[in-house]
Image (cartoon, rainbow, N blue to C red; front, side, top):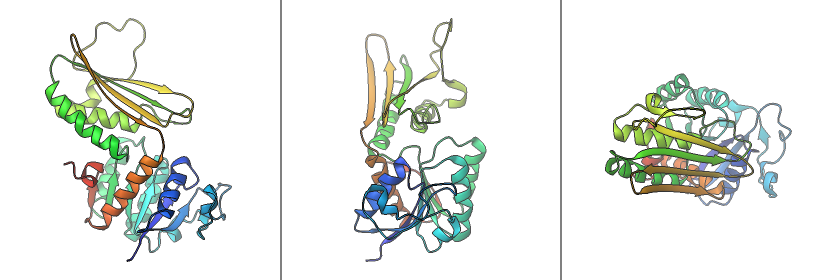
Length: 268
C-alpha cells in the first residue's frame, strides 16, 4: 500500500507536534517533510525529537523543496504563512488541509480561487466532535428561530492571538445562515456600559483567554422559561490532529475544489 505523503507546517508548535505524533503512529500516512520558519531554533533537527522519537525527517524552512513529491500539506500556522504556502502548493499541485484562523475576507477569497486548481479542506476546527456540533446547531437554529436569544461563549489558552476563535465564528456563520441573517451585520462582539436592551436579531460573542484551556465552546439559546446549551469541550489537541489527518485522507480521493469537515465527515 502506498502511503499518503504529508508535510506539516509549523511542526514544532502545539498542533504541529500533535500532527507529527498522529502521522508517525498511523499505518497509511508518511511524514514527507516538516516545516518551520527561517528563524526557528529547531531547523536541522530530527522532527521526531519534538516528542522523543527520531523519525529521520529533518526540519526545514525550504517550502518548495519540502513540498516536492508531497500529497498534502497540513497547515495550522498564521494567515501570512498559510498564504505563502498556498502559492507553492498551487505551483506544485499539492493539496492543502488548512486549520489556520484569522484570515481577512480578501485572503478567504484567495483560498476560494486556489481551490479551482488544487483540493483544499478549509475548516476553522478539524475536530470530529466540533463538526458534529455544527450540524446540531443547524438543527437547533431551525427549531429555535423565534423567541430565543443566541449567545456564543468560547474559551482558549492564554497564547491564542485571535478572538473570537475561528470555531466560534464558524458556529455563528452556521446559525446566521440557517436563520437567513448576515453575521457581519448581526454579530455583537462585546458589551460595556449602558448598552440598552438586547436586539433579538443579534448573535452575541463572549471570549475568555487563560491558562492552558485547549478549547471550549458553548452556544446558548435563551428563551422564556428555558434555555438550551450546546457545548463542546476539547481536552487534547489530538482531536484536531486526528480530524486533520482524516481530511488529508479525504483529499486523496476527491478532485480539485473547496471542502470543509462537513464534506469529510459526510454530514452534508
